Image (cartoon, rainbow, N blue to C red; front, side, top):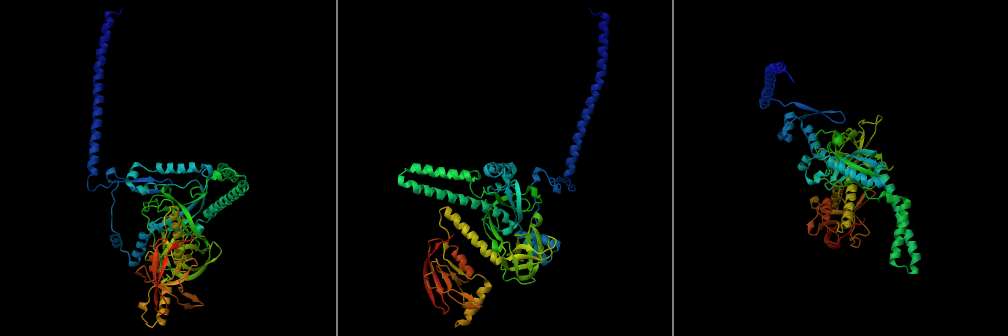
Length: 560
């Protein structure tokens, strides 16, 4: 039992503790209240300061993966998409550019989006063969992971699947430049830029072709031996399947998964600009997007290759061609490319010389090349050489140097030859695709006409001199230069124009196609591109004496 004296002592202690805790609680409460009041006033002061007209938002520094610094304006969500738009002419005026500087600047503005960085990769062993499907799934996962919901909302459906695609793991086989020649996704580059990838894939294709032929021959021989035994069809099918399976296992083709473009060991990719979407945002190449291409065909003798995007972008713009045969020494030129992987680099110069011959990768001489002092460095190969109208007059292909970098002596393959060969490759590729889709292709006449303006002018002057009327303006039409043996015109007794030992032998001209007058060779080519296979057509042909006759033809199928 606790005594009354002890109880009274505890009561006195409790009263004293209570009296001492009350001031302490009031102290801490006042401190917390003061802190909250200070925070509230501070936020109010900051908000007032940010809304004042003299406030400048600070710059937020971000560091890219390659440790290069970038300065971006820090903005809230409401102003994240705000952009300042200034007309190019107003910007040029404010900078006081000369007329020549304006021209060069405008060429870069218009043409830069059509110039691409080209690179090729030999897939690693983990990404090829049976692991190819895993690689493609990984590619898809990386592509989808790179996209955010906000990006999905901002991009069109055609551009979403091209966002932030990365190169697969593997060995680099070479890189260079290229340019868009057709809005359907066809790209021109140098053959030597993708040479190693092309040769690697061709070796695989030839290997596949050999074993396919071996399996077919074995099957045919076995069938010939078994046919007299009156074996049923099921047994024959099983036997054919057994042979194909055996050959596939021996050759290793089953593990390779066929020879489709996605299964080939070497793949070619292109990159548009610095971030892959065709506009310059200053992002590093580590965030750029690469687009898979297939090699349509190559012209080794001209050091030219044509690629095609597997999934063409909707906003592609092709570069127009100019005439390389009309260039003059001293004429200004512009080269755009990716030297050392630096996107959209421009260099300017002049035509230093014309008619140069250089030795190409095929060992032959490429004639009529353009020599220029515009800076061309490793990585510029395959890029366009442009006149000041923004037209392609050549494809940069090589330099002469003792240091490995530009020494002011660069060479470009003439644009006229590139255009003719590249357009022929594209035309055949389109025909193949149409036939695969069971659709009619373009009609084929099997006749060539003169399209170079200088050559046509020579023919017209010669014809005007021979004609009774000396009016050169009255000479029009397309000069036929050759007719194929299988052409619908082969039996029409049409004479062609030729040049023998410098002498011009004039032939017939096509002056009207299906009721449409033809002024020159280019008009004839454009008119024939509109015609389809099997179409019946009337051609008005005029000879040297001015006599006209109508020829009826049925357009054939383009031979592949």
